Length: 305
Length: 244
Ligand SMILES: Nc1ncnc2c1ncn2[C@@H]1O[C@H](COP(=O)(O)OP(=O)(O)O)[C@@H](O)[C@H]1O
Ligand SMILES: [Mg+2]
Image (cartoon, rainbow over all chains, first blue to last red):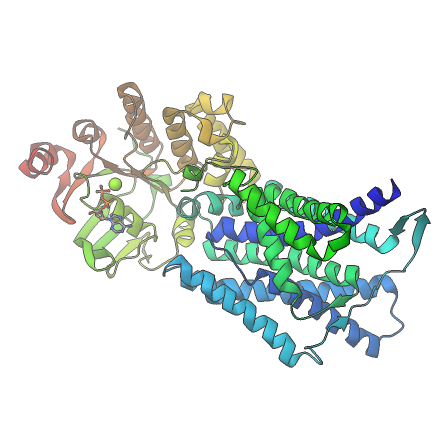
């Protein structure tokens, strides 16, 4: 029983992280109809920006309270990643829309490689895994086999708050209404007076900020980051978004948790080979796709003008 | 027909020697027009004549490659659509183009996207609901699930939400029942009587010329006739453009 609870807890943590990454994929697809394959590496950049901020604070303000330290690390990650996302959209993706969509896919994949290699080559000792600080106090509760970590609970709740915030922005604000309008009919939205470029930038800032949080969360959860973490996180986030039905924010969140659930199942049913949990999860995704080609929360393709 | 000049006060929309192309081939060549405040100006022409393309050019979606467009004394030829809209031009596009996954209410709010005053939004909303009581009954319904006629109401209502100086309407009666078409023309006339200039694109020649003050005829991307509605009724180019 304890063990099952423990698996659930871990699964929920991972699910939250994947959901946060998947939201970006789905938002970007919504407004620009492109898959931004560099998104996973953007998450990785977020982790490293947070780490750099931590080092900097550590050498100049070592006395800083844990709360402020965490906040600054998060802020650094969000700021760097939001800027990177906006730059990617404005300098690369929007101009490339004049050409065939395949060019955009290729360009974003190349950008991902450039980001990965830049960290590997230019970040101090970037080719080796880096220890990521736990930041939060390492309190935990132990009962039988169940180990509840305080920092995990905080991370999970913050993630839930961020998802709620995204929901509010999308559904309750003027900006969110414009984002949805652009996603449904870009030209009609412009005819209503929506500034297309501004909405694209805002969407990329939003999706990337959420991913930056996932990056920091990833670092704090595993206490280690390396230049390649974005590759797997990107593949998982993309799969999650597709499972949920691309373009649908709630689908992406659901997809993230489903993927984590699949990984957890993989560990539970094959405890002798937990290293294969990703193989199991991605295999299950392929089956899911065969069963529901348009995603779990299906939208008729004709609705996308 | 009484025209409230004070609200309509803008300098005419001047379209001057405009050339528009998608890719290489010119769709519009040397088009010049004038759309006057407080009046209904119509644009007639068969399928593929370039009417919608001209509207796209006016609103900045497909900027002209040559020529210029000026509204209210300002050159808007290469402005972004949202800036052009901000100058007081609203558009009811061809094919309705409502936001299918938004409620009727949200669709109408999108029409007032640039309006900051909540009080003014509420006031225009009341007006639109008075014009189309059906929209008020269905305000929570997703627009994509409404019938064709109801979607047309959403599209027209949305175009009125900003109380524009100039309303550009592209084939509003396409696909509507005869009763709804008549209702449509009645509403367009009313919009004009309240002081909004209307640029109406239509294929329904008789009814359009009955309510329009001025008109132009477009054929294969060129203006082949223009003048008062009375003149156009007699002009043989109109007959030619439509019947042979
Ligand atoms: N996006 C486009 N790309 C290429 N050609 C187009 C496009 N839109 C319209 N055209 C062409 O431009 C011409 C005029 O079209 P349009 O302005 O829609 O005519 P109308 O509204 O008068 O029926 C047509 O020959 C059409 O095929
Ligand atoms: Mg047309």
